[in-house]
Image (tube, rainbow, N blue to C red):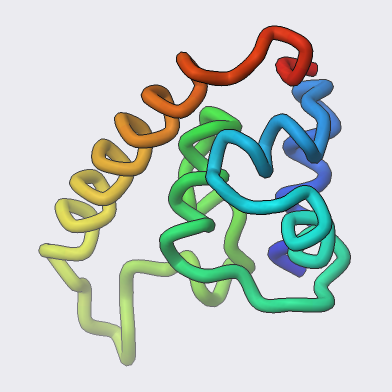
Length: 106
């Protein structure tokens, strides 16, 4: 399910699998397995993919996993932690994009 959402977002933005894989530091074959649901995506890769695609991690997660509540209790620190992680991975991906050969951009 996560892989499908990632693929839909990537295709909507007309970005190749190879470009995403390069930007997040993995092989195209490994990235392709994530989109096909053949392997689970690591949290660090999920944040990097979301940053590269210009979206929130929550947009890529199934609704039940994207909730900031658990047993009716709101986790106040969760949005802050997510924001900090997103900023970190966005910075990391942008540094990698600057090094990306122009032929990989689409």
